[in-house]
Image (cartoon, rainbow over all chains, first blue to last red; front, top):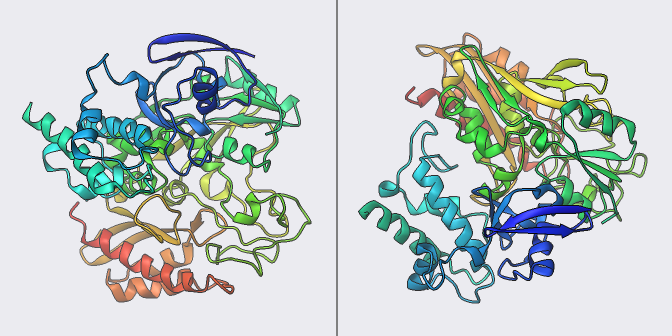
Length: 173
Length: 329
């Protein structure tokens, strides 16, 4: 079947088998191998991408169901040589070891910061009626909001530090 | 994965007609259940009809109810300011399930229709009456630590995995449905899911081809004092071992009315009416909550590895009610 999809701003007309997942389309058809295949069953978060502004799992998304939607992958975050603030923070805080989960971690973290900016609660927010904010967000909140991204090297403390750094820079600016 | 045809249609009626006309067709929403189970050949549709472009993605708020479109995502619903304010138990239940990525994909109707996480259901080489009627149940004598203790039968002890549905059943939501002939009807949430009995493969009250269009939750002022407590093996991204959804209507220290739903321990989103009835007019004390918990679990049937859930559920009930009682609302 035919479908079209916008990835990092570029529109692609694809002729596909309907069974093709977005993850395999990105990696095998569009050669955007920054998005990683970990478990391929929605358990690890390595394949996280952003569709229409929301972080989702590309391994459980059929590319046929993305008709006309805008997908952002790790390749679409930097502006030329200028890293996205979350990418810079992961480097600065050493938020990875082997790096395999890192693209998914960074995209997930970008959205987590946007969600905090929007003030929405998480499971660990004391009262869901509260509006959370960057300045008072606890590490427990960051860990909960990032729990969909596993890191088998266990770089978690430095990942939390990277997210906190971006949140702190937001508060300052 | 078995090959299938992918259909994008313009209206909910067209989608319902398309599925009703093809015995092997299925609706696709967020895909977090369907695509997952297609990869392991547990579900093998030959036609898929995408329901997300059908205009069922809005939440309509009025003074006396909220109407939630079938394709609203779990995140949209949990984060909605009116849901957080009027029905905190629903927001809390949703936020306790899965991860942000999955909640951003999974829809409300998809959550209601999600399949069990019983490992024998997922494994096409295992015996499972739910997946293949009459084949037996490997969970009965197998690794059944995660399995249900309420609403079970000798044919199936699978747990209903949803958190959201436990809040929905406590809030007396109504499931609104479109038939392929264009007519509409609704089913109370408590009557939507079936306990397994001797037909565990008949999971819900939907007829083939019927499409959930929206869910309506009428206002319940007491739900401002409500809470969802989930107990699990790790702090995040895990299914419940036991969960309690409670609503408490207090007159000083006295309980005017209470509602209690249970998750992680039952074959369907569970409503403990006997325990609710017991609490009417009682003092809102931990002791009375414990009595209610005994009533709620009176019919529980434990097996080799899941006996602990009976006591765990009782303690979860007491703590959930105590938290709601002590909340500053």
